[in-house]
Image (cartoon, rainbow, N blue to C red; front, side):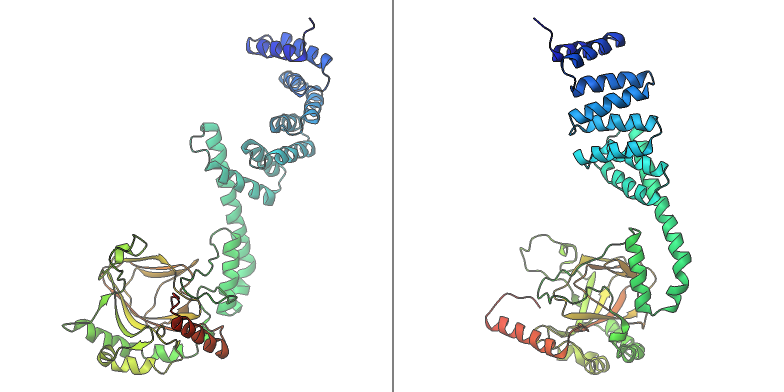
Length: 423
């Protein structure tokens, strides 16, 4: 009975394992005699040719193997290796591109492609490819020393190119940034930080009414709030009223976070019914609290002059916010993007800061700012003293008067219909 091509290949494999390369080649050639397009036979003969540095023969057999089985990633990698040893960058690139068509996430293919691009000086594409290798590294926590060294190189290459780009942007754009408005400077800087992978863009996450198509800006441009300077001018008076309250026998502070019994554990559990973050409300959910306003009468009279949000049963909310020394308000998002939140820092020891989305700011006493609290934000006090801020809400500046009126009516209808809509 005639020997089949598969039997010849089995003998070839056994001869390889037992260190008889000449016999392995004879058996693989015999298999090709019976099946001239057998990919495994061509691959065996190609590998044997590589072992003896016969690159032309190796290329011929690997090309035949990939033609016979174009979906086999390993065959394309062997062809790429032969082209690499032959210093044929174009041939290697074509083979690697074909290998990626079979498996875009194949680790070794991506490594070889990144190495090729780096070797050819195509640093932009190499950075992208090495970044992909670094991402794939997370799937190989137990990689051996050689692979770990490659992963280290991937991260180092990406970091070096990022620094190179950052330096170039610094040289080219610092002069321009110094001449533009604070708004344009902040937005252009954010765009560059995003390009460099040093920040992310945050979207609104509203637990109540989400008003579509409003800009998702972390900190609103100050030009929208010309009255902030009037608020800031009264910082000393507001601080004096707060200090008098804090020194009184009963400051009237209550925990900012109070959850009903049985509430499942969530981001606020650590602050529930805790004095770590406490407040004294002058207005709450649109209702003026007469007793509290009487204890800070000048502050109450002042804030009433400003264009605050006005939604019956929901806004405005105005309060003194006290964050104790060493405490942290965890990342969270607010209820509706129809409002802007104003902070006027009153007592700010060193080590206090506030993050909204991808931008972190230090509070500065007497310098107010506005932000969108439906973008993830957090605060911390790493000092040994309490921090105090006056907080109030006004309309999102991108809303027109008609929209503000309709938003109030939307809530009114929802309340009449007893719909569950947070404000």
